[in-house]
Amino acid sequence: MLTLPPGARLLLATSRVDGRKGINGLSTLVRSQFLMDPLSGMLFVFFTKRADIVRVLYWDRDGYVLTTKRLEKGYFRVPWRSETGHVTLEAAELLLVLEGLDLSRAIRRPRWRPTSKRSRDDEEKGEKELEPGI
Image 1 (tube, rainbow, N blue to C red):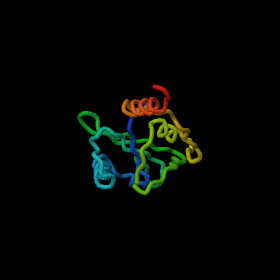
Image 2: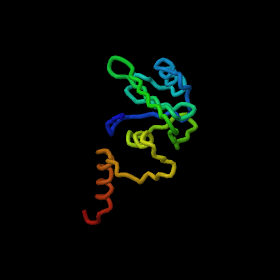
Image 3: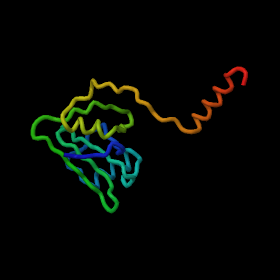
Image 4: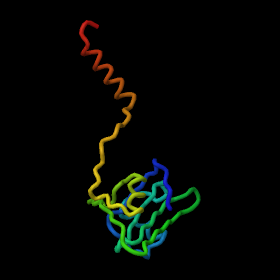
């Protein structure tokens, strides 16, 4: 079982990769196709051509870590498509896919996002300008 903190940054490759690629091959793929640094601390997720193997590559303080999960029967259902060849996703989404759930019909509900202090100051300033008699 792969455990990920909720704030983990994940990048999923939407195109399938050769299942024989190891740490060197996958890190080269991150540099050449995604134009990203594999030492950044992000988790890079790759599915094989048959989608029965998933590999997660990341840099851990002093070396690469490559985690592999192979299904004995069936395949992973990865609903994401992208022209760039990769998508950013949340740890919960990856864990659901790894547990066998098909997220192709899942709908993301809007969430509250904190605004920056500058935006709040601008809003307060705008409210004061609208209040009559002040």
